[in-house]
Image (cartoon, rainbow, N blue to C red):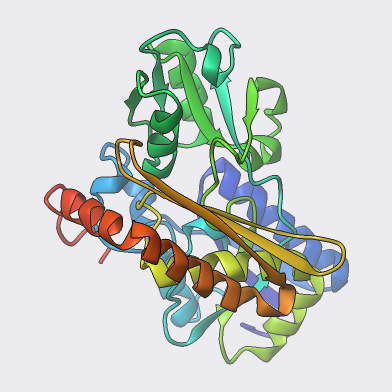
Length: 323
């Protein structure tokens, strides 16, 4: 820590990021009375560049890199991320200190006329910045016109209300955390749309050698079941060598008897081809389950599909952004 009894949290400056970081702050204060916790807002590359589709921004850590630099430079003591934003490779000297209990990881549809995904009119315009969502939506409704949509949740809702969009698809977790539950039209089931790896969970990233902060965040924040689920999902993603802008969806669910089921999908960009499977084991095998399912998907043809996707995206990337 910066000094005994004082913790500095690094956070992105969006309303959702600050809600999440303030929750971590309150949990730390609740579990360690007398501790002084402050939040420092740090702008990331992904926050600064809002007029370009995420799929065109090359590099990793678009929403985490600047926070990680601040950690390594000891300007902050921990960083709070949405787990789905954290690359599978964490910089040397840093580690995941805690994973919060997961909020609902489903995606939701918010439509202008309050109709569900299958009831949207022919050729409806649906906004999302995610290639994962785009591909899975097109697999269900190839007639949809998928429009790139960036910005925080407030901005996306405003664009739905004021532009020609018929609907948007966003993570339910963020909607719940910001108090917009009533705006949801439909919770899209996993059978139709698998979420991003880590969706719904928060990650507290710390310096690897900071045992004091590790102890504090483990006690206040860490949820063992979510940590196991996310470990399986991230192992799968690492083995597939997929980033947040490759159309890979996955969710692991832990049962009361310590069983873990991991389901994942790899889609072509147009949604016409998808490779999907699941694997079950115990929570202690979380990482192994992730690796095994990834290798199974690769053997089923995901290797060729991913190679085609990377080749397709390569020429569209903006060089050096986020690197």
